[in-house]
Image 1 (cartoon, rainbow, N blue to C red):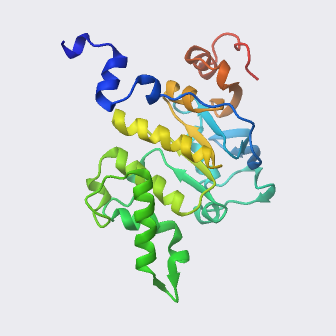
Image 2: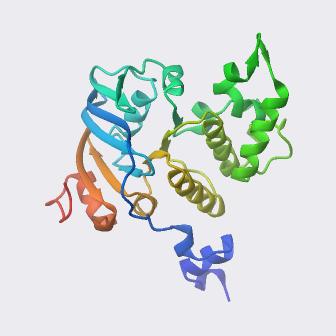
Length: 281
């Protein structure tokens, strides 16, 4: 039978060895745990304004919006890459100031950026060193990195995430897109990040790697992490998120529960077209 004659669901099954329903798992609705992150009326002048949100243990919150809506800019501000003009951030109920990525890492926040090659990885360095970058101070003793502990930590997370690499010393530039993304995730797991901000985590990866990354996101939430999932792929956002926040022109305009979310409803909210669908706050 010719490939062009196969239904999409069958093509996906043949490519990744599982059904389409497994490739896009449904979010599990569960009572949220304690609040890990609270953002109140956060503004970065010229980028976004008056954004308020909360993230809880075990929760995946999607962030949908058109290009230029301010989603990545919000991620950068939460990770200390852009200084807020006004507003407040609280982690674990305590007010904090995140003036740099170092502050964010200390507070156990992690960012998987939109452009992993330019912002998320040091391409000429090994998977080992890319994984340990945020925690070199923890791995060091009297100024020397404990290489055995560094290797043991990287091996542990590479095994858990099924990172396919010739060896830990291989430069990440030679890895596939999916494995590069797993290295970025391994970094934040090694750093004990509790709040993970994932900006387009499956962009530029193949179907099989996408399915694996979806599973990893679900596993992170199941372990009690809070995940802010930024994605332009609405089926991905709908399938993985417990709640979906919608940004438009730099403002947070709606919150949609998983069970009420459809691609059409989200597109209307993103574009500002028509009335808000039922179940939208």
